[in-house]
Image 1 (tube, helix red, strand yellow):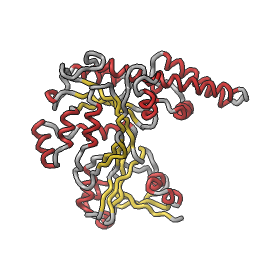
Image 2: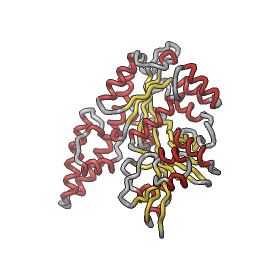
Image 3: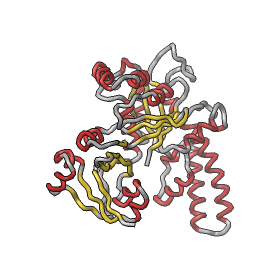
Length: 366
């Protein structure tokens, strides 16, 4: 399972600078690779200190971290929902992502013109939201037309879906995103099938000036974004895209020194990746051996057979048991054999819910 996040924002807010920082990021080590699929998609490994610790203990021939895909979604202007600018391409790309990262400008600079004439992050957020809502309205109206035709058969489930879709249309017409629509669990499943843009989880990235680092709490623009984000339960990550771009060009030791000079513990991009994982309810488990140490991404609440299926469908289909060691125990005893001898390796069955950081070995038979 890989996570795909779409980076959106108006012109001159720092969106492309942030994406370019990702695109040019030098590998921290062999376990943090980066590659480019095409001009607007980058694959970056998920920074995880636990992975480093396992590699140091196991000394595998190779290591494969969890990955995250960033998509630089360009072309948004007012009227994107009607196809202005590169609106149609923008909206088709954003439909494919798991989460939306909305980059907003939170700094003043007379040399960098803002497309709207001045700096107002809440206005910028609402411009993007309004365009997504308009596109969702178009989608829901088309879906309602199809449901009306299907409902003529008298099928109750179809009639219920139609009634819910009409309520959702009113909700969108009032300027509200689909994510805030009150729905039952069964209705939520139907809404997912609509693939609405405003139903996707969102994060906000405040792009601040270097002078605001390491503490941006005094920035009035950031305060406004935090207040706005709190109303919808979204997280705010503060970065300086310019600094992130500079960090991406440095070697590991130079990067550490640069961060120390700035009074920052870690790059903003690391915090962004972890926030995206948390927003989507994702965790990591590991497989570890001499051949390979690897991180695997699963949803919170995944049971052992489902986690095995991330590796291969045969593992899930023929699942017998999962030999599991907690990460803290593995690090304490330093080897799988020592952890097993200490009674810290558990044999878990089909109902075991995998925990973040578990080191697992699956037994299966097909």
